Length: 241
Ligand SMILES: C[S@@+](CC[C@H](N)C(=O)[O-])C[C@H]1O[C@@H](n2cnc3c(N)ncnc32)[C@H](O)[C@@H]1O
Image (cartoon, rainbow, N blue to C red):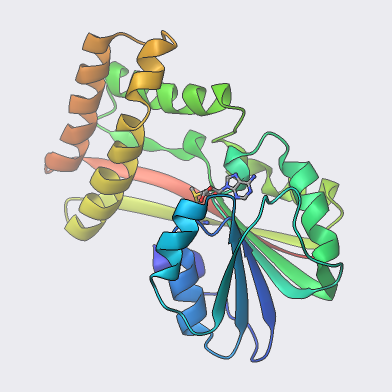
């Protein structure tokens, strides 16, 4: 995933980069270590996540608690902005992008990476596995987010005033010949993510307990069976302020 999503992101020596919504620093570690002469300011609304991110002890990174919608920085502070898997959780992604744009210096760039749960398909694809997957999409929508946001990066960035928007799809494909991907992506990312919305899905009445169990079992079969395959597409956009 690191190379798939970040392999073509490089920041010039001396540049100042804002990573908004850095979480526990999963992307920060790669960005900061691969660009040791760039400086990073990494923000998140969660002080708990920031505390974990700080444990990575990265010399070229400072962390700061901030709401992405009300950033405590002056206009034209940063050379680049990086946002990954954050917009999907926000009720007003275009408004957020509009707030981030002035923080960039003229000619500065923004990089946005998001998934799109509508891009997922797998084999064997059973009715129950489809139902639990739809629970994931609908549960996030109930929270005000949009897990289908990847396909909207171009219009969102354009509407927010960014120019030269370039979007590239990044496809993850897993089958039994790639056990590291099956384990890391299908089991530990995809199935874990679906399992994370179980309580919410049952409480919202999106499905019943028996169908839920059946659907999770079927997704596990995709990972466990020798003929199982899984596809998912991330979208990466780069644009100018
Ligand atoms: C799925 S995590 C992604 C973390 C990191 N960017 C990554 O790719 O690993 C989403 C992050 O967005 C943060 N977040 C959500 N709403 C936010 C807001 N209004 N302001 C700042 N961060 C926010 C969450 O706290 C969480 O750390």
